[in-house]
Image (cartoon, rainbow, N blue to C red; front, side):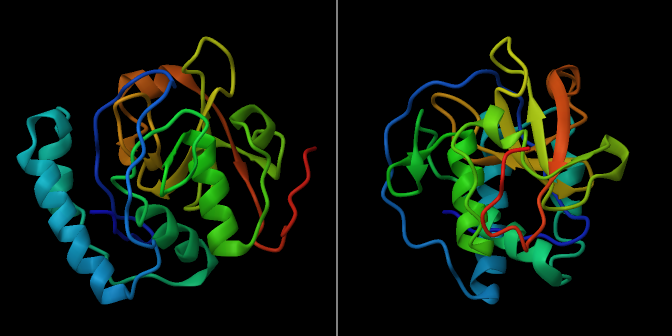
Length: 208
């Protein structure tokens, strides 16, 4: 149930939740898939989200139909991150989790995606990752950039991967699964801490 895809400017909104804690594991197939399979499963995933009352947000109806507008337009290194990240949709949240087989927390998702897509080793926690790469302004965000939030009453306690069009993918909190959110939802707007850009060439990213 976990495959998706994007390019410069598609996306879906989800619900906004808070904090990080623990969650049970879920056994899922390997993340790498051929592009046609990804597209087919994206449609199935979005259909399930639309049908589920718990997966709806007030602004979700319009974004559902718009989500397929540019599914074919995947190029460049950022798309490798996008495909890898979106293939994690539906993975259970697990506090301290670092693999899709046992569950992922927010930083575990980011760490796993960058390692699989680019071979880049990132630090373990969101706070540590917030010192890697270059600082990016909110208005200059590009797909693949990292976005940080204060969800635990401390700065840089949550991290996600920016997808474009004001959307990001993340592993949210206890009881949740990897999903896509809108940065325009008031919960996330109030808690935004900043963004970082990591170059594909940084195979062993250093804390700065």
